Image (spheres, rainbow, N blue to C red):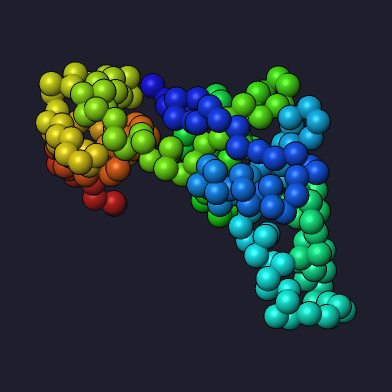
Length: 223
C-alpha cells in the first residue's frame, strides 16, 4: 500500500493573500511556526510562496545597496523583493504544489530537489489550497507500526518474487529489513530488494539471499 500525501498532510492551509503586508506575513509565520507561507489569489489558488529568505533580503540589501547593473537577473530580482512591501512583491513564483493523492515518496523527492521544507496541498480539480505538508509530516511514515510494515513486506514477497513469506527469513528492526533464504534466480534478488525498499517505513534492506542453482552453473569450455 502506497502512503499518500493525504495520509500525513496538515489540514490547515498556511497562506496569505496577495495584498498581505510584510508584518502580516511575519505574523502568519510566527502563528504557525513555519519558515514559509503560500500566497493565494482571490480564488485561493497558490500563485507563489514567501519564505524567510525572501523577507531577509530587505535586511541584506541594506548591507549591499546600489543598482545591480552587473549583478544579473537574480540580483535584480533580489532588489525588487527587498523593496517590496506586499506578498505579491515579495513572493517567489510560481508556487510548487502537491496534490493529496501524490505518493509521499514523490513529495519527499520534490522537497529535496527544490530544497524546500513544505508544500501547499491543492485540490486536483479546483486548484485551491486545502492544506500543507511539511518535511516532518513525511517522516511520519518511518514511525509506522512494524506489524503494518511486515504485512506489506510479506505481500511484496508473494507478489514480486512469487514466494511464500515463510520460505524466507525476514527480520524488521528499526526500519531495517534483513531478508535471507534461497531463491531460484538471481534476478529475483534485485527485484525483491527494490520492492521491499519501496515499502513505506523501510529505511534500508540488507539482502542475505543465495541462488545455489546459478552459483553452481559451470561455463562450458570454448573449442
